[in-house]
Image (cartoon, rainbow, N blue to C red; front, side, top):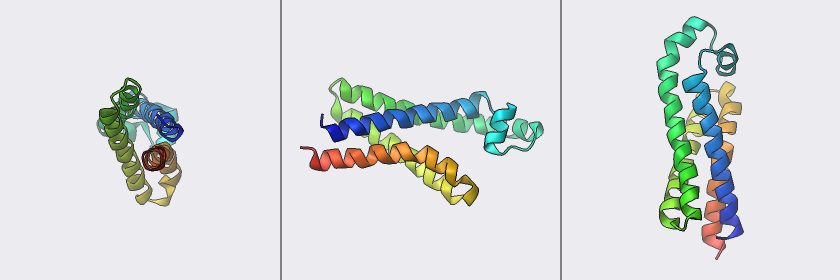
Length: 134
């Protein structure tokens, strides 16, 4: 594996870890005062009303995280074709979700950049490594 592809793998794992954290916030800790503040949820009642939606959304993030991390594990185990397919699909989906979040309003730009930076870097280094790394 080239250095560029190794860097891509590191960013893919970091992207996965960020999305595991988002899963925790949305699916486990949604109604806590700290998480309500992070997501701009005004009240306990609003948190309870949106809890099932957040719970579901958290699992989307978890599944994308599993895909990115499992992809890197498969690459390291010698199954590059399947591994890179998972890494690219998972990171592209994470990046797409970040773009959608950014498009919902300026107040979400910080969250979108935190959600999308590592997947974007993973994809850029995967492209560079697959194009120029040979």
